[in-house]
Amino acid sequence: MSHVLAAVAWPYANGPRHIGHVSGFGVPSDVFARYMRMAGHDVLMVSGTDEHGTPIQVQADAEGVTPRELADRYNRVIAEDLRALGLSYDLFTRTTTRNHYAVVQELFAGLHRNGYIVPRVTTGAISPSTGRTLPDRYIEGTCPICGYDSARGDQCDNCGNQLDPVDLINPKSKINGETPEFVETEHFFLDLPALADALRQWLDGREGWRPNVLRFSRNLLDDLQPRAITRDLEWGVPIPLDDWRDRPDKRIYVWFDAVIGYLSASIEWARRTGDPEAWRRWWSSDAEGRDARSYYFMGKDNIVFHSVIWPALLGGYSGAGDHDGEPGALGRLNLPTEVVSSEYLTMEGRKFSSSRKVVIYVRDFLERYDADALRYFIAVAGPESNDTDFTWAEFLRRNNDELVAGWGNLVNRSVSMAAKNFGAIPPVDPAGLTEADEALLATARAGFDTVGDLIGRHRQKQAIGEAMRVVAEANKYLSEQAPWKLKVEADKPRMGTILHVALQVVSDANTLLTPFLPHSAQQIHELLGGTGVHAPMPVLEEVDDLDGGPAYPVLTGDYTVGARWESVPLEAGRPLAAPKPVFRKLDPSIVEEELARLAG
Ligand SMILES: [Zn+2]
Image (cartoon, rainbow, N blue to C red):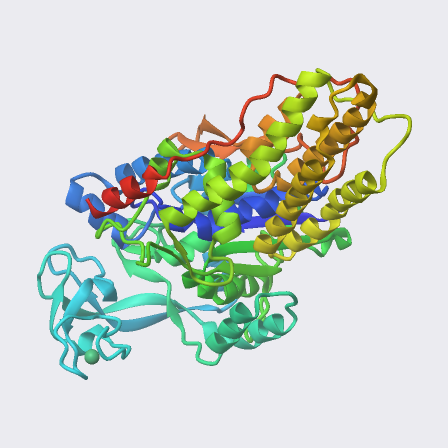
């Protein structure tokens, strides 16, 4: 048994999330966490909303609300969406808690003490009307290289060159059109070059990573520059150093604070359980030779933060790097075991875009379709290791031909026939099992090793494919054995045996599919006459801030209950529930309706 940290990317709280977001970080991390718990590991799954930074400040200004009010609104929307999808967070919190502020400041102070944070005077753009840092991508002007007139401050989309906003001709703020002022300003920088060797050594020891992630991360090390970690902005975590702490105009840069969320959320979770040190079991391996593993889930645009920046922060804080140093009060902290990055999902051949309305938000999706229908699509056709396209036609086909006609049909016909003829799980004929019976049972039992191993190695597409192969074998078995033809009384014992075998395989396949389809797994467990929790679900709870800040909602749950990753023999005579369909067949007209919505 290991301690397994499932660290899930933090959604930015400037709007509702669309299905592209949850197919990258949400569902895959939940499948993994659910499987690891079922297999007996001690899992801690944490995340929250990322709420600081310029985009939220800009949007709040535009709407005439405070950044906190804007973040409050979308924190709640996002948490509710993730709950409805059944994502089993131990704690889904936010970056505006006082606990988070304290942990961010502790890491900043520790890195500073060890010499990995250095001050620098730079030329930066500020908005003359607000005095705030104007981030590069909010500045537009003419490219000094190719003359393209809408080049961004950080790069030109026409010639592809990286730019410095100070070199743009005729720079303008994209927020309000004013000409930015370039001023000398003092900021803190993370001394990444001093951590490059330690990072390289760590990356060299990684095993089992997706090769593209490892290659991409190694390449980043070849050109590491010191990176600014503070901004001129009022919305963010204050800088915990004398003469800086009380300055209203300087804050820690949002990306620095957001990645620390994995640690602060673990600490918050521990404090809420009443054992404030419990988080260490997932973050430090050196005590008692403990096996603590950490898996980070995100889309590919976030790899750099998880395979370079976050390990650099953890290493520097722990005293590993060219400047050495001592671990801070939180002790030596583990670097990621694996960075699990997904590719992009597109929508009907186009990039998701909220502004161009190429989008379907999670809550809109779940108003019209079931959570497991989406989870199934993401598992079988999501962007695990290639960019993939979501189309309504393909969603319809996967739902109707595979989920309903494959898995749903197997459950339906075996439960209905057994309920009608026996009212309970039928017994096995004393004459025993045939070769075909034994073969099918063995196929289902073997699935536990195969499917489990694949999920453990983040091959979820293959994993659900194997589980669905068991389903297909069972459907084939039922067609061949044709229990419905065994109508005379003398054939009833054989009919009972066939249905017993079929129901046992339904039960096993249901367990194999539980990490992917937890909502329907609970229903199928009950159809088979099972009681109690089979697939535990998250709950949204209002909690007080632990340190006196405003109250907020968190996602949490009791996941110590539920099915184990094993075949459980069905007891003959156990009453079956009244059969009812678990999955909904969709009318083909939804494709045109959805495409019209998209166009409309
Ligand atoms: Zn250009």
